Length: 423
Ligand code: GDP
Ligand code: IMO
Ligand code: MG
Image 1: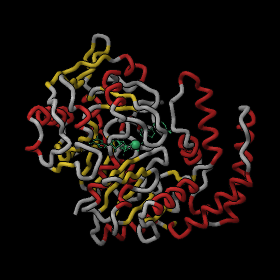
Image 2: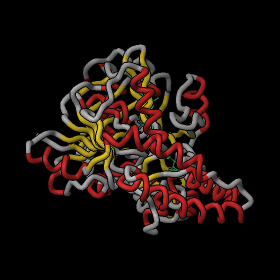
Image 3: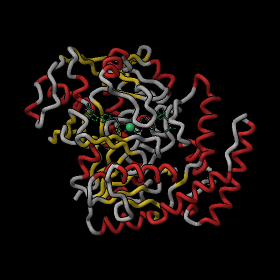
Image 4: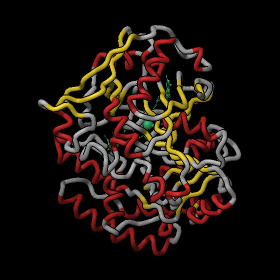
């Protein structure tokens, strides 16, 4: 029995959804513990494509229980939409396989409006958020003025709390010259969602502890990635939650000593969506991947910025998260390259750094020092086991694991569940 925390080791979109779906085969429960519907996790099963935002990717496997934990910020209307979308794709979703924490905070339309206004006010210095209201919702949580799922399912209490919050936020929106939010429309939509979600809402901490007692295996599905972490990421170009391993504990109520291993997911190169420093960014790789129809955001459709693998970043991610094992995805994205670069250190002025500087402005000035590798220039998508991979691909993967400082466990060579090599 092993409880596993799965985290993104880069800037998000590492392929967490795909790996979670793969690992769920041997787990009982899959938990989301942070983030909101800023996340977009893609799972491909044959002809079918699923994009999960708030619901754990484990939902696609029958007989597994999925939990949206207390650390997640929930847009109730969006979850209802997601449940209905999954049902339309013939995936069963009921209170038998989905539980939602009664302590999770709620995202409202005024959070989205404020998210947008703050981005406008920042002008060129904007973060490039997903505009899902994530920052303002976590802001209310920290300010102790948020509404939670336990409020949503009590209509009278909810109505009064929302009335006051909506009024307060409309005053701010008006001052910013933005359109105020209709209280009545919001109330109607949220009470409608409340009725649909009420059967799912419960104390998920109690459920998870019961599961621990019964030795059921739990998988924690990280959202975003290490460098989008509010504490450890490239602040202020980050999201508003702890995307690193510790977030799985606080966001679920499962204590640290019950966690058995941490797996880090990373692409064989690097991507980032939104603004902020990205030392190994390289337009050539970006143009190549975009021409293949790849690396467009699963949530906002934005083209992702692309670059070489950054081992300074992944090594730091291994430290913060305590990564034991690695899943490397999108190896096939490099199939056509003649030479492949990996950043092993940064040059910052006269200094050589092996960890990223804390200050984003300094990170933006860092110049990558690269080690180069011969490509394999062979399609890898059909590889089923390690020995099927070209020698140069094996060597490249071994180097990524060595530079990062963790054991290579999974290699992904295509988007489908089938395109996965377990070592
Ligand atoms: P997540 O947010 O970490 O779950 O990742 P996303 O789903 O946002 O982005 C990862 C993208 O890469 C998705 O389009 C996946 O279908 C795709 N993907 C994952 N692993 C592989 C792989 O090994 N090869 C290819 N070609 N695509 C992959
Ligand atoms: P998954 O789980 C990639 C980025 C946004 C922006 C910054 C802040 O699919 O890996 P936010 O809306 O959270 O306030 O935006 O974080 N971002 C992501 N980038 N993958 C994600 O999730 C992301 N969620 C947020 O682009 O730069
Ligand atoms: Mg994503």
